[in-house]
Each structure stands twice: as C-alpha cells, then as structure tokens.
Image (cartoon, rainbow, N blue to C red; front, side, top):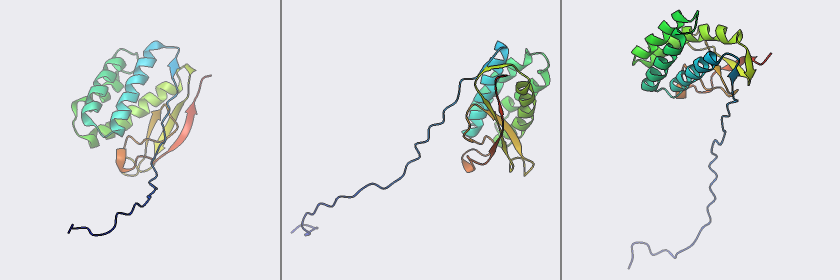
Length: 164
C-alpha cells in the first residue's frame, strides 16, 4: 500500500500570475558640447545607482562625475558635491547630496544645446522630508532615486527638455 492511494488524476492548471513586462526605454541624448555628453552620462549613472539603492556604485559613478565636472567651467562647486557622494557609503547622505547636485546640473542642461533626444525633469514631492527633490532622466517612466524600491514610481514629470 502506498502513502497516496488516490487515483492519478491530471488537472490542468493555468498560470494566472501577471508579470510586469514594462521595458524602460531611454532615448539617445546628444549635446552639441561633447563635454556635456560625458557629464550627462555620469549623472545618469549616479542616478541609476541611487535608484538601485547601491551605495558602492553611487561612489564609483559620483567619482567619475566629479572628474568630468571639475574640468567644465562653472561646475567646480558641483564637482565638490559629487565628491561628497563619492566619499560616503550612506545612501541617505548620498541621496541628500544628490538633491543639490541635481539642482545644479538641471540648470546646466536646461541651457545646453541638445541636438537629439528628450531629457525628462522629474520630481518627487516626498523626498527630503517632504521638501521634494528633482532629477533628470532619459526615460519618461518614473524611477525614483530618492527612495529606490521603497517608492520606485513616486513622482511626476515636470518638464521635457528638448532640442531647440
């Protein structure tokens, strides 16, 4: 006698699990000034590290960004902010400094000559203890660098920076 005396019956079960198949597509971003291209790429790498809540990757990205900002006229103080992020292993501090850094680069890119693509200026009203926080993205879908997976989609697109 076996442990299971029931007749072998086959039941067709259908998987009804819904999976998020959303693909975040970033548009190519190009600037007339090649140095701005490097700064933007470094900024997006830092933003993505914060979205992933990865302090080590944020260190690395901030270090590279600081190097790019140092040699761009007028961005020396912004480079110092990036260095603070690079030297910290604390995501809370990194995200706080990211607010100041973002405010500086937002101004820079609003006045830059974009030759291709759209940059999305995004805002989370809950960041920084309710004071809010802005950031730039190459995709319209919100991926919040201030909260990561805690509140990934908290925020809205405030503005689209486009070619002129």
